Length: 397
Image (tube, rainbow, N blue to C red; front, side, top):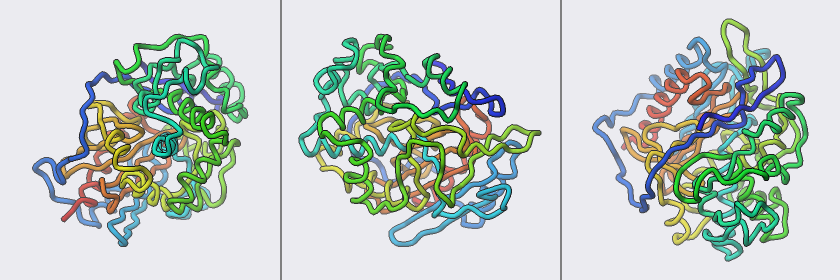
């Protein structure tokens, strides 16, 4: 399946999109236990080498204007940065700067759903038909588990021509986020649920709607009560509009030889909602992934189900090393070992958050340009290589 377009106004390339979607087939492989190290090359780069890699990334033709990486091992935090947070002011990126986290928001909706599973409000085998009977009958047999690991077959609303037409006419259009699935309500499933892996933004919209249906509370409240507050996230929210709170990392469309175009506030978050609308900071994302990957939010029983992986199932964009999909979390097996997390890309931003299975070591890696398998793929390859070096530094003995 080709990536889904998310067209914008004339000054912004038509290829900008909410998130890329990729179909990858794979059998399910269970198990929490992973080797602490993998591969033969365990030598992590020194701090100076990591810093130089970020400088090289920014200096690459078509590279991001800014990049910031936060490594945390226990109570020790190292912040690496290069370039600028804003090309006009020239100020450096900071770990307290706001930014769009793109599809990393899918890990947040996963956290909400899995916490409700632990509370008995949802079950991994709960179906759309049971919880959301108003959704199309063709979708009723899809389970929460299949939504969380992108094996549902739900058609992707962000690929709907009607959705694209709305965004193309008005990138800041304010959608009713709870009606986004109506863009594809007349479509059948793309395949039999559970038979394939295919990344779809519709999956996480449905997850959020299921969470609202069984609790009677708005998704934004559930995020606050079930995720933000337990993990101490102080500068994270899910807006509806296009504005970002100050200070923020400015995201750019980069297409040399033209100057970078600031697209930080080009698109309303309402069109992404639970699939990619959250705004956070590197500091808050560090807290989140340490708690989420480290199992602070869910029971061991639920975590065993979450850590059941589909080999070859790529996050979007792909993260470092070999990618495998679990329930709203990915396993990244690098030459130096294994981390768990999520990636994301949207207009102006590409994100990676990852941590060890005990949550003691973490990495957040943010660049202020969009890249994916179809948008600046050469840059993505370079980004993934740098990310893997940072993972090796994270996992050093």
